[in-house]
Length: 67
Image 1 (tube, one colour):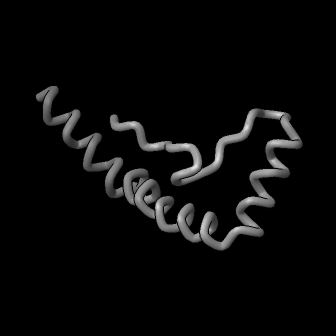
Image 2 (cartoon, rainbow, N blue to C red; image 1 turned 60 degrees about the vertical axis):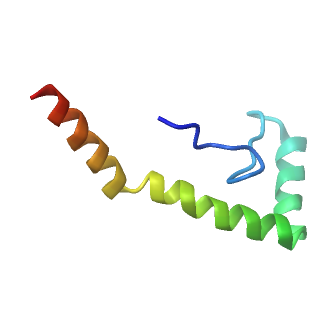
Image 3 (cartoon, rainbow, N blue to C red; image 1 turned 90 degrees about the horizontal axis):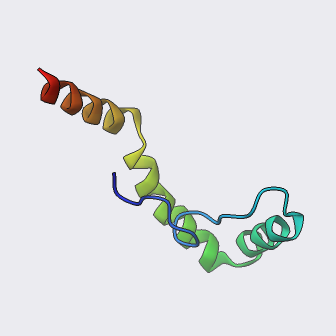
């Protein structure tokens, strides 16, 4: 499986329970249109990769290898 989650490319990762990081990430997305648009565009690639159609195709391939 390729590395599909890319920080600051298709999402912004924050440490759990870190309110300051979460606040900064939310402000970055809401206040910077370029960041927001880039995340939105790049998130579509991640969404396509994680779609049920894509996942079922991968599972069918795994089953085909078994039989």
